[in-house]
Every structure is written in C-alpha cells, then in structure tokens.
Length: 237
Image (cartoon, rainbow, N blue to C red; front, top):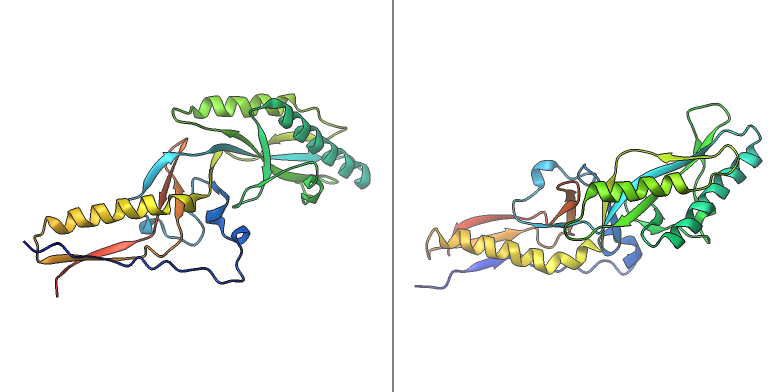
C-alpha cells in the first residue's frame, strides 16, 4: 500500500521587520470575550482546535466620579485607582490591567495614562480598567468572581469616586501563539485519519495553517484556540 500523501500548507510567514512582538496579539496576553475576534465569521471556527482552561478570569470595571470641580474630580478618580493598585499588590490573588484586546499591567507608573471619558451624568467622568484573578485546572468561575467581588468591595474610594463592574466576567489567555505547534499536530492528525478512511488513492490539501492563532470563548472558564484552516480530500496525482 502506498503511503498516504499528506500535503500540508505549513508555510511559516515571518512578520515584516517593522512589526514587533509588542504589536502581535498572539504573542501577548489577550482578552477572550463571549464573541469571536472582530472581523472573523463564526462559521470559520474549525472543528479541530485546542480546548483549555483560560489563564485568567477578567472583570471589566470603571471608577466613576461626579464631583463638580473637574480638577478635584480627576484627582479623586485617579486616587481611587491608585488605592486599588496598592491593594491588589498586597492581595496575592488579584491583578489589575488595561486593554480591550491586548492586556497590559496597570501599575503605579502608568495608571494616570488611563483615559477619562464622559459618564452618563452631568459633570461626571469615568476611567475603565480590568481586574484579573488566575484560573487553574478545575477552576470555578464562581470562586473567581467571588474573589473579584470581594476585592472591589474592599477598595477604599476617594471623595465621590465609585468603583463598580462594567459588564460580565470574561477571560484572558497568555501568548496564544505558544500553542501553535500543538494545534497543527491536532489538525494534521485529524486530516490524515480522514483521508485514510477513503483509501490509499487520496491525499489531503490543508490551507490556512500559516494564519495566526485565533481564539473564542468555549465556556465559563475555557477557551478554544485554533487556526482558521480548511482542508480538502483530493485524489492523488
């Protein structure tokens, strides 16, 4: 019996020299919401990928303030954020961050870079950031949420500033591109099995394995990592 020919399009495309690792989401910590990454259709999610526990549970929050004097209002908002950073450092289980897609640590050195935006009331503004807690195998989303909720309640607020949640608990994954080789192995194994069932006269042509690792939320604590590949079973030439 002839060996099954598995034709894999495994071109590794090096990024342009002008693109640094800091500009590639797959090399950093990324937020995984209930929705797919922007610009990728749900139908493009392939059957074969990697299901794993997320690295962090992530809660978007805001600090809102409505002190009439704008300078004092700004000081109260930022002072409350500073209190949260200092408390998180002592907690041992909570981290603060910022970012809508790529997660960056929120520190005493950069917290004043958070943008203040108009809130939904007159003379009010708010700053948004993220509260994180690490997950592990067997992780319980309720336990993670309880830790975050307790932390929010424990943060001392300043003046009229208020710290509150801003949406549902979500997840994050650190460097999803590190799972690229394992995902390719899963795809190749599945494609080879599929072709072998049709006999030795067929091969598999796989496309899309040169694309970046993509991600979607799979459950309360799990993420699904995948390459947007497709394959076709074809007769051997």
